[in-house]
Length: 139
Image 1 (cartoon, rainbow, N blue to C red):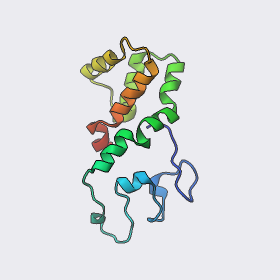
Image 2: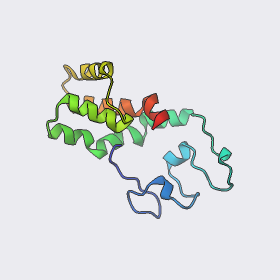
Image 3: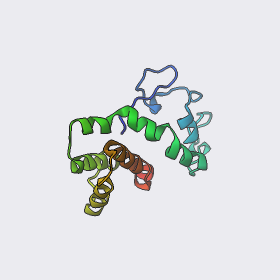
């Protein structure tokens, strides 16, 4: 979503978590969100309940601001001088797999009005979409 690449020990940059063959290999993100140790075949060993550390990691951790900025999606679109409506549509499709409803588009565009730090406001919108219940629970 943010166009950044993961780095897992023993795998090339850009490898996906499902490619990690060794259940003992992990990252803070995988540990926080319930990486299975693969010591038994029962999926019940992994807790699916949300936790405070998960919420804090999403709000303040690497997944949020750092990955949004490193990925450069917003900065690229701003440099290309894409219209705000197009950027908002692209963010919704990227995060939710759908276009924004009219009310969502109006509210999101309203947050961009009058601000002096346009790119930062767009990055904040991206962050908000990534931290929304719709993204967290559906995608």
